[in-house]
Image 1 (cartoon, rainbow, N blue to C red):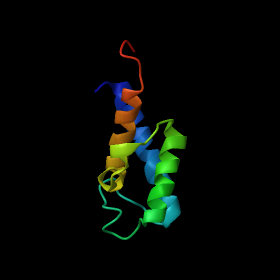
Image 2 (image 1 turned 120 degrees about the horizontal axis):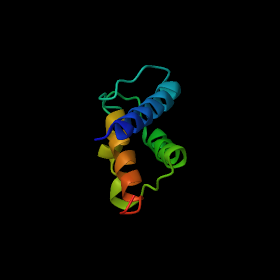
Image 3 (image 1 turned 90 degrees about the vertical axis):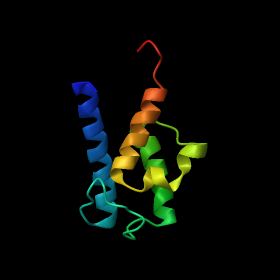
Image 4 (image 1 turned 60 degrees about the horizontal axis):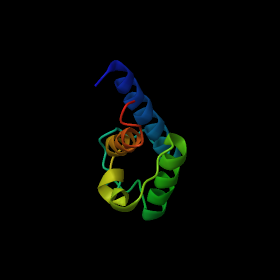
Length: 92
């Protein structure tokens, strides 16, 4: 991973963590299971989908809508990175 990708991943993670923390009024470590901790309901999970799509210009469809992709901030960061990479031209 290049330094530019690492910074991008870090910024994405910070953005997601900031959004989640703001909504639950608590600091959320990147590896905290949001569902097991009770911080995320199914309704808030849908808000997360919309937020990720709007904030990071990705589309989350089909198999990507599984709970494991939204279980932690780290998992959401990985999802956004994967979807952004998939949306780039092969010669980029």
